[in-house]
Length: 606
Image (cartoon, rainbow, N blue to C red; front, side, top):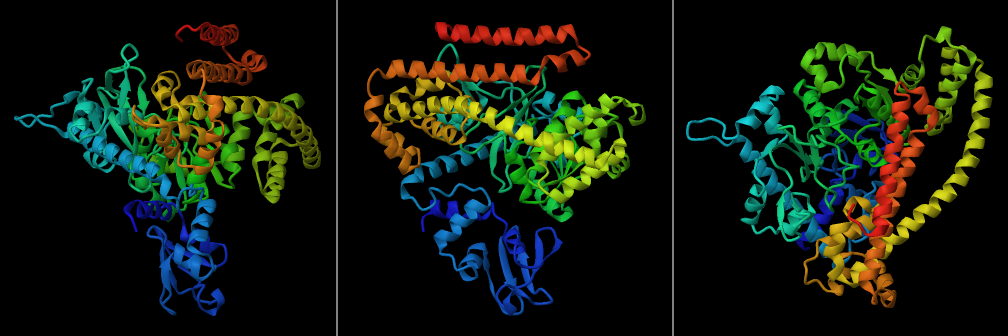
């Protein structure tokens, strides 16, 4: 068995939960950490009164001390569920959202090699950043005093620096490039992982992406360094800079600190979800070890899937400003769709938990934690502009109408009815009338959303068509890849599978052939589809590329413009405190986007 296949298997096994599978049919008792006792499936037809099988979910193994059965999740599926090895792999892939489409294909080793090389590069970069932070001169003083001074000012102890592998990118434009080049790593691969960037004025010149920044390695649950976050310490914007998306790093599913927090999350059967690096570190510094961060991005369905591997209980502790409250409301809807149980840590004293712990101690946090709100209480409280008893009929109706979308996200009908009863009681309104109005509104909204969805799908399909065409063109004409990379960043490709294909093509060297490109896609069916369209993509290839660049960029501008209009309706702006200034600002945003599109179609630089 070759090393790449073992790597694939280990990768799959590290992302599944044996306890989760056994829980479907057997009694599972949590003993603490990743340890469980389970009714043994292999004797007494799984109905033994006193469970005798020990399960270590971290290691993914089981052993029964009565009948002697032992193995891992694959063994269980083969011996108890009568699945073949291939069927077991496919079942695990579907169950835990792991891509196993190329698991048994010998032709997809290119993807695995890229994955392994990405891990190696990030690991070396992590070591480089870590050594810089601890570097001392001959007198025993820290060489990079500004970095040491910054961490001291943030009261980050050495134990946390070591645990989170925090480092420092020096104030040089080629320190990382030089260090990694010594280990035979190409600048092209550094660029793909976001460690090096290409000069706009000279496409052959590369420079370090992270300069004079405190470096936070982003490490997944398998202890793999998948990316970095760099915090500016000299006031340079952006304040935080993340690695760009790659085959190994997907920002929308990454949870900062999950490698450290996962065992504590399972032990406490609860996760505290915060907004970024410093909030996560502040929690761990105070002994709150089941906290993880979302890299400052919105909470996504991918986050929800990751969280569900460890627990169903989520405490949201996002920023307390207006944007933070809006983010909590959005997160509630996303997480409820996955049957997660939500409570809200409503931080009113400070902006966030990092700031909270600079003012208060752990005891104050415990008081805050013990008074956390159920999600529906938080939503109602944040909707109310004054005391409930003084609300007019129209104001109560507005609160109720705003609450409907949260009810839509609740999957359990029983829970939904209980929440309706609770909210009706709290607002002192008739429960049955509330329920009838909700059901009627829900029916109308569903019909309306179906119509909107049809229109949206048409627009999305157009955008996806251009993205797919780009992949076809580049795979059949690899000489265009570098030109495409200059104009189209990875984040402009919206469809996940197409983005992954694009990333794979960007890893190819200048001499790559069409055969190399098709092989790099790692999907034989798609490769054959592309070959069948070869005639369409063999003439006027530069003109086709230019047209696709315009179409894709134009589509992104249209999406941004639509987002500005939808998220900032006139009624919302007029209700805000900003008034006329807010309207002008939104008008300026739309005008700028219109100008960008105009320049794009004129062939000007954006």
